[in-house]
Length: 370
Ligand code: 13P
Ligand code: SF4
Image (cartoon, rainbow, N blue to C red; front, side):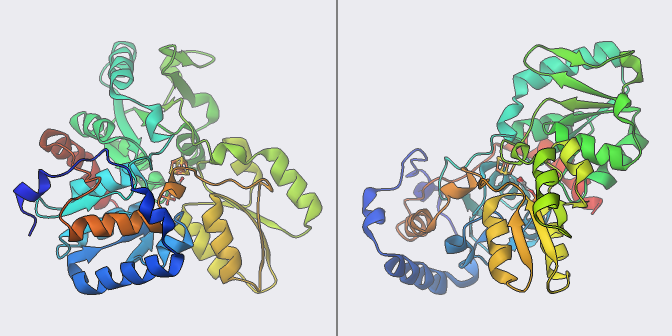
């Protein structure tokens, strides 16, 4: 059990000492394996599909955002969860676990540029204007790629979180509650999924959080989906031109993209879905089939290694890594584990009680609809 006096020793801003960089890969592996063995089920290491192989090797589970949230919520044994992913995922894990469980993020610089595109002040301004414009007809939904403050705001206002693997269900649910949705912070996921559900593009407005204005042609009263003007800087790099070039250069290729890609790219692709959907599609594809994948490079690279019988390339020939996911590496994982052993915990992710309570209203609605 974590002692509160030990927790007070935390200096969350400390960065990893240089000495870790001097260790060989093998030395680090051995030390990680040793601590994992000693701690047994007291330690849990979930890793997102975008993590590097050197980290995934030590994961107790890998998954997409929804699966990792579900698995953290179900784990009651681990005293320590070292979350190998980005900051919003670790926050979610903290909120879904109990007060006796401690979540650490190996490197605090592992943020998400998409989550950073909506802050709470901007959201409150937007909400006031939406209420003035539409009255009480709007329900907020937020992609889990958002800060805990945004999740709390959404929970407080009757809304829910969504992930790329359950966004359809959640948009349907939301439209049973209210006439309109404010979808934060990824305009592309919101647009792609709403369009798949039959909502025409001319019923979708964009809310520009920098100018505090709608971007919409026509009568704003006709807008059914209000899309926050955010995007993922990795998935924005997959373009219609990439798809066209790929079809020319690789006849018979099937294009498989993540729904964080722009609408025009997804419309040109053959399939789109979450990271788990992408993995399942490739696992179930016949030998010899050809695939161009539009998502983060670590995952594409791993799929290439695991399926040498299939021809797999990145949809964008210029590598598309997520720089923040890549902050988590073997040295940081070891540093995090060492900090548990010495009780000088590094980078604990702890969301305050009120934010947690309000966010759980939003998260639990999502988990109930899986
Ligand atoms: P998934 O939920 O599909 O794993 O996506 C998470 C993410 O950050 C994609 O960029
Ligand atoms: Fe965030 Fe994009 Fe990285 Fe996913 S790929 S963690 S959305 S920046």
